[in-house]
Length: 202
Image (cartoon, rainbow, N blue to C red):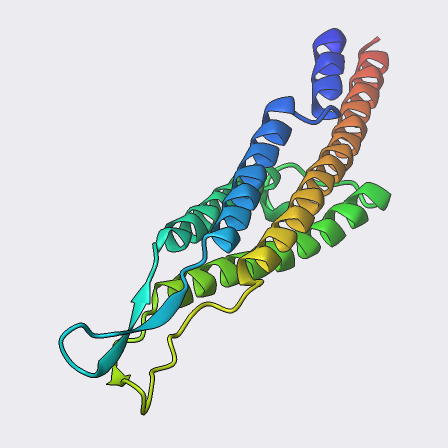
């Protein structure tokens, strides 16, 4: 029984490579999509109509909108994965008070702030990128201002995703350490109680 418990303790104190890899991959996908969206932002230009004196806005591809939404869902999936693993730090296995638990809480808060900010930037950027100026003007008198996404929105989201990735990995690692400390104490307490009961029976 002790051997099996010892193996479980070792497993509890070691972060899962699968979880770390999935968190890393999802955030890297989101980062790459955000950078691609920044480079493929929709831009518009005023062109004259062939048949009259009116002018209107012509936009290039809207691919940045899809890329931004793809990055948003990648961050959302990574967020859901981390929350399911660490149980939001309030459910599941108890965490031992101490340094690892405190660090896990700090990185948890940082991660949520960074992930939520990144998601907000990605959704707002995708929505703004998809907006096109509909009205027209008069050639030589008044030209419409072609609405376009401001430069740097998706780039800022990519930076927030990178910080979120670091916070997520550190939060998960500290959570595993705090949880394993709690497992050690519970295992030690069970062992002491079993020894005490054996002595009493003897």
